[in-house]
Amino acid sequence: MALERTFAIIKPNAVQDGHIGEIITAIEQAGFVIHGLRMAHLTPELIEGFYREHIHKAFFPELEAFMMESPVILMVLEGEDAVRRWRELMGVTDSSKAAPGTLRNRFGKGITRNAVHGSDAPESAERELHYFFSAFDLV
Image 1 (spheres, rainbow, N blue to C red):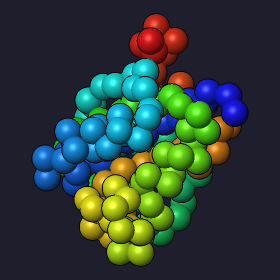
Image 2 (cartoon, rainbow, N blue to C red; image 1 turned 90 degrees about the horizontal axis):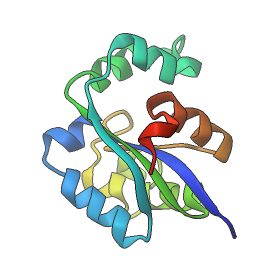
Image 3 (cartoon, rainbow, N blue to C red; image 1 turned 90 degrees about the vertical axis):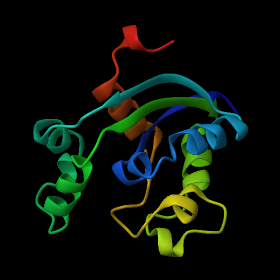
Image 4 (cartoon, helix red, strand yellow; image 1 turned 180 degrees about the vertical axis):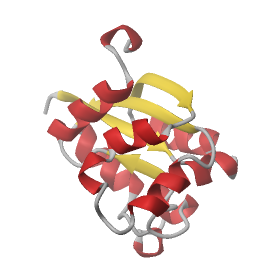
């Protein structure tokens, strides 16, 4: 299996609750290498571009407001089969249904406030990581 990159976000609730270090530790202990990392305040324009497929869905206004509550941590992770493995480490979207020990189970608070984001496929990972990071930013 070849090395792959994926995109990750530590969401506002996990940042506000002081879980950045624990999440990054879990990422590193799972064997990922962090190739890009930055803290950012997301604007409505950034959120609408990033979540463009969700703009017209009923939950979007709540998601947009949540993603602007505090800074987020944006990351590019690399590892073998990174997209699939990151999604396993995160757990399912609804943190109340996430497997014990997953990041969403440990730090999430429902469907929207689920602590972390991860790309769902290699193609979306490429789009998402280049949305926030230039080639210059990546090591």
